[in-house]
Image 1 (cartoon, rainbow, N blue to C red):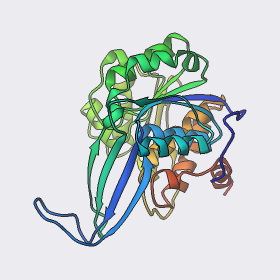
Image 2: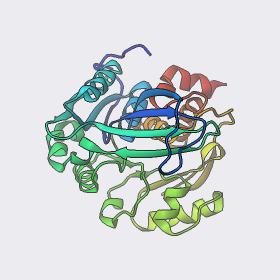
Image 3: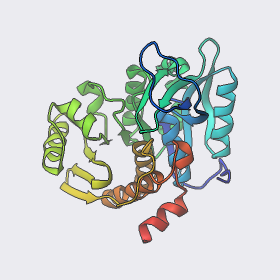
Length: 313
């Protein structure tokens, strides 16, 4: 992917979130407790939900500023270099003096089963003070995009700062966890998948009707618009103008890693461009559909040209 200039003329999108390095070992099967397996193919890849969404937004055409923490280590240096290659503004990525960069350790079996452990490291030290340091960027953005791999108090601080400035807040509520009403009331667009919507509402989401019930429950708690994603099947969109089902794209999936992050990043850009909600969701569907046809998280994220090409087809 050719590096994009940080002086991109796209809409200003601020992403507050996590940055990890995925360390992946492919083995014949996932080891049992206490077992050592020899052999296997090892690889590393840039990851973390915040970083994935920042890269997705940048490739979709946004002028992205990332607010995050990485360690003063080689993994942090590599992460920063990767963001800069994407044209992402990194002036608010803090080099933490005492915590290492976040790492995910992943075993992948030949049958596709996996086992994952995450050491959050510097991500867990991303603070409201870090958000305050990026105040001018957040207040000048067209959209703020956040997730839940950093402390909840930091997510709340970012959402509060943006909402007070009239900046729309998109929250991708992953990893799934219970959320306070004070945060939900500041969210302009919530993008849960089936699992996340189920946890947030207590409604078992498995199809469009159950997704609609969950969306209504979340809107009753103060969320402006709810987009419940159900993978390739599509998404239930519920807002002030009513409810609508928007179909996804049928593709042969190779790896669904980060598909939700790609959807959120692309959605943020299209909404920041002032496009209608249904059009923005379709754009995000196309981005996610392209991404699942490739392996890896950030390596799978498509460019704006590829997204538009998918839409035309």
